[in-house]
Length: 213
Image (cartoon, rainbow, N blue to C red; front, side, top):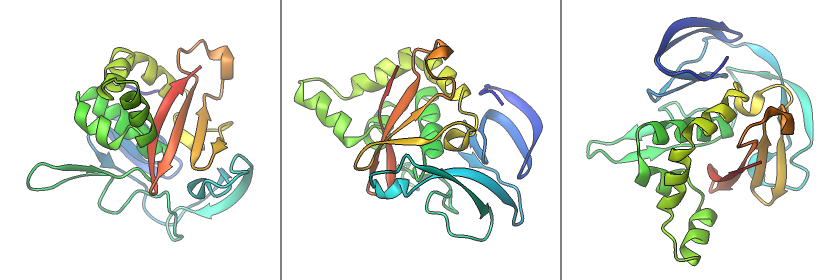
């Protein structure tokens, strides 16, 4: 399924019936654009290719294996929180939860689409990337400005990962402690400006390191 805007239709996915409206869908039940999560009900088993302890940042995290998991009754540290991945309090303060690469992709899409520059800087961009900008005497907000200019390129990259880290042929490559790379399944043959996304796990939350080719 490709990333699209303003689409209202129904799609059947393996986990149940998902209603799309006014946003875009990432496989696995994340609806972008409206801060809404929809998943099929019940306990359904499926086969996934998963990495070894990606949240722990251990060496060898790029090793993948096929496992049979329950989508409804087992603890999953990367699962969407029951209260959602985006919360806004009575004062209008927004808190983003990003427990997996697909959550990070959702926040990237939303903050760019809604021009949420400060929220992007504070809760989407990784600390190490912010510090690199600061050390060079640059405003970290320039990272948002650059991706806003390249928003279509970001969406084209996302289109190659309809199920985020669970897209067939994709695994998380470990680049070091708590640093991972997710590459487009097509590799260098896609002709994309962005062919991979580097991510950092900071206190259990996935943040953007940067995109590359």
